[in-house]
Structures are given as C-alpha cells and as structure tokens.
Length: 483
Ligand code: ATP
Ligand code: MN
Image 1 (cartoon, protein in one colour):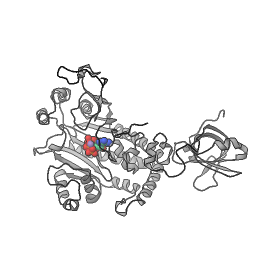
Image 2: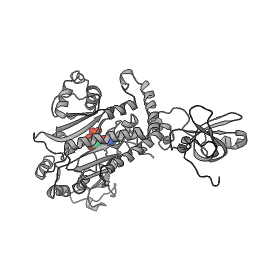
Image 3: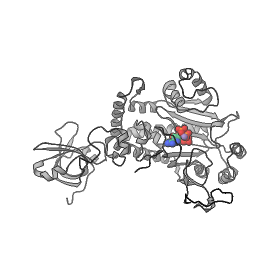
Image 4: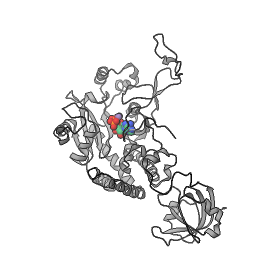
C-alpha cells in the first residue's frame, strides 16, 4: 500500500469528503457477510465509533475474507462514500485489505456480546478493545490533561516528588517496603534486628503514600505547586474504592488558609467535570447509557436517582455544602439509620471517625449534593494539620461525593514550629527523622494549605464506573498484580 498515509478513524468519520481515497488501520469488531457483500466494523481506538467498511467478498477472495474475524487487525484502502445505512454519515468502500493479524475465533476471548466486568478484569490485557474500556482510557487521558491545564493556567508548578521515600512518618497507611536485602538471611544487628545499614539506602525505605511533605518544601519557595504521581498503600481493604497503587494529585499553596483551600478544591473538581463534558461527549454518552442499563438490573431502592450526565451537570450547577464536623455529628446522631442502629458503626457522639456509610448518608440522603466537611477532631487526623484555637479540632477538610464517599482530603498545615513538634511528640512521630520537614518551620515559615485528590476516584465519578478496578488500566489490589 504505497504512498497513501493512514488516517485515524476519528478523522474519517468527521469527514464529508466522499469520493476521496483513504487508508485506515484498526481492529475488527464485527463482520456480517453474505455472498455479495461484507460489512466490517473497524475500530482504531481514536474514537468510540466504528467505521463501516463495505467489501466485495468475491473481489477480495475467499482466503482473505476467512481471515477477517472479530479481533483481527486490518489495513483497509478504499473510497469514502456516503453511507446507505443508518447511524453513520460515511462508510468505506474497500478496494484492498491487508490482514496484519488474525484472531482465531475459537480462541479469541472477546466475542461481540456483553461480557461481565469481572470477566474482563481477568483479561485486562485485552479489555481496552471493548467500548467500555476504550471510553474509560480516553476519559482518563482527557482528565489527566485537564489537571495539568487547570494548574498551568493558574501559575502552579508541577513538582515530581520521590516514589521511594525514607520516612514512614506520615502514617497515611500501610507502606510497601523497598529493599535489596535477602529475605532468607538478612544481615542482623547485634540486638538481632534486621540491619538496614546494610540495605541499599542504608536505612529503611518505602514506596510513597503521599507526596505532600515534599510538596510542602517546594510550596515554601515556589508558592503554588502540585504533584501528580503514583501512590502506594498496602492497606488490605478490598473495597470498590481502594487500590494498592493509585495516582494522586496534591496541590500545595503558600499563603492559602482553609477557606482558600476549599475554594480551590471545589473550582478544581468543577473544572475537571466541565472539561470532560466539553471534550469527551461521545464517550460520556456511551457511559451514561451503560450506567443506565446497569441500573435497570438493580433493585428499585438501589437505583441512582440521576443518570450519569445529569449527575455531572448537577455537581457543576450546585455549590458544595460546607459543614463543620461538629454539625455533621449532630445530623448523623439524629439520623434514622443511626437511631435504628442500621449503621455498622453507630455514632455515639463527638470524636467518632466517620466511616464511608456515614459520609454517604450525608451526601446521598441528607444533603443530596457534594459536601465539604471541615474542622475535624485532632485525634482522628494527621499531625501536620493546623490546630484550631478551640484546642480540640484541626483545620482539615474532606470532600465527599455521591457514590464515592471521600474524593479529596486536605488541610491547612501547622506552620508554627512549637505547635507542630508538640503534636508530633504526642503522636510518637520521631522529630529527628523529620529534621528537613521541620526546617521549613524554622526558616521562613508561612501559612499554607493543600489537598490530595485520588485520581481514580475522580475517574470513577466522571465515568460512572462502580468499581475502582475498572478505571485504571492494570489495577493492583490484594492478590492481584497480573499484567
Ligand atoms: P479513605 O478513608 O477513603 O481510605 P484516606 O483518608 O486514606 O481515604 P487520604 O490519605 O486523605 O485518604 O488520601 C487522599 C485521597 O486519596 C483520598 O481522598 C482518596 O481520593 C484517595 N485515596 C486514598 N486511598 C486510596 C486508595 N487506596 N485507592 C485509591 N484512592 C485512594
Ligand atoms: Mn485510606
């Protein structure tokens, strides 16, 4: 196939230049064939829609036609023509087809029928060839792009924080150890413990659970920064919202207080949702219909009150509810499920840590919109959060979303050295190991704030996919690291 350059199917479908010759390449979704004509639906991933290829079996030959089956990969040269069929403007009248790769129908696991998401997880190496996962991958890309756009437009600098860290001080979750020591016979100290001085980094090292602490260092020089990197937590929580490896976006801003922080987070989430609506219409329409179909299979009381597109619009159009933790506890304590002991964890009173069932009650039943909870008890939050004057609460904020629960966790940071070290001592966090973090409070400290957005939880919300394993190409969860 000399000379002619390949055109993406997205461009072909948008074109109205019938009569021109084009070359397309992609994978066969379906083929319908009669004696005189074959219809091949070809997809190259550039867009959710397939290009209809119309071929003459007799002209192309029996041998070639036999090799064209669902999953096979083709190069097709032909003439663009106005489509006779419904649902598409143009189709391609094939003059020449080269088969790059066959896909034995007896063995190819993706047949043109509905496969369950559970089954598709077992073939995660191929599932991107389905409409659902094609849409999710493209949406993910658009949202990544939008994250960088949002911050770049506002003068934030992207900072790469380390993936391997030497401090486990943050205590955000269980960490994965990074080591080159032999398991069977590690070097020992005189006391019999493992001698990490002989390890690669000459100290204990882990995969990062958050880039925040290093992000703070950068913010106290560049003012506004954000990180967007892989994050690892060895928590053994087999839920539809937890991964062992996920991506987190963590902006950190000098001179922002908690209110500024909440404003930024709300703007950010709305920007991302609007970006998806403006740029991923085809994929979102597909996912919207998909979610509606899934919903029909559910019991009446478990169905969503809104469709996916409606839900996205709704979040855009409404201000998030901002509610102090203390008021949230009152609402929860007096709620029906609490009084009837329907919650797994009954809320007894102030100080309780909120479980996802409580968060979802507030968002889905009580306020029916996103909620920003703030000023949490200091006992249930991290050491670096700024202490409020009441001596009981810290300037923390979590954003809770319908169907997801916590999507953002953030705070104003404790910038006062004495308060910070006091808190670290109370929480048994070794100050010596954190000398570099504390130096920012010793030299030119400043009020500052930041938050973390779990990228996959965002993609879950925007795509309407129920399980976080279906919004990352190759999910890592307890017991799963295939592919
Ligand atoms: P959760 O209570 O849901 O486990 P967390 O309190 O541990 O969340 P943070 O430590 O505040 O969460 O992390 C910031 C954000 O990262 C969360 O709001 C969430 O969006 C995301 N996140 C946290 N843990 C995970 C995980 N295991 N998988 C995917 N995303 C996560
Ligand atoms: Mn967690």
